Length: 172
Image (cartoon, rainbow, N blue to C red; front, side, top):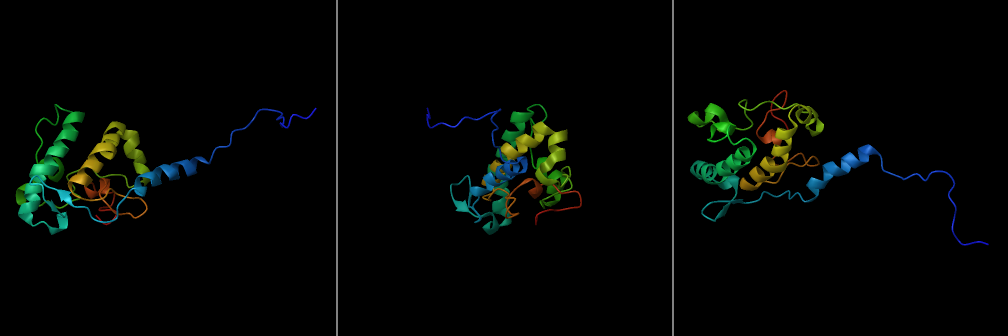
């Protein structure tokens, strides 16, 4: 008697996409919500001004009042003893004393330049994860910028602060 079902002989095989497809999808997910327009940066005074429209004194004030406290919070949550006192040297090194705020900077360790920061994850997984999950998104928002997108190669990301193996990368 036919019951309308099909018998499968042998072990059933699940069909999974290729591993590279999975990695590609994971890489593209953050960029789907990426806004290509410059966002306005929130300031302590409550006004919204784009970073590119700020003069030097506004940028300094914004860095002290908004950006520095966020960076301090991220680093202090990670290593409170080491980052008990956070100032401009955290990112800018001694260059800030001469008002050299140019980023990316030699002050910070150079990154490998490899896709998905493989060596950084292998050598410093906790640090790399913290920076990608908290520091980059919070700094991007504080500066009114979109996060870096692998598709457009634009936005605030690791290479906004760090140099690559041969110098600045991705237009930074």
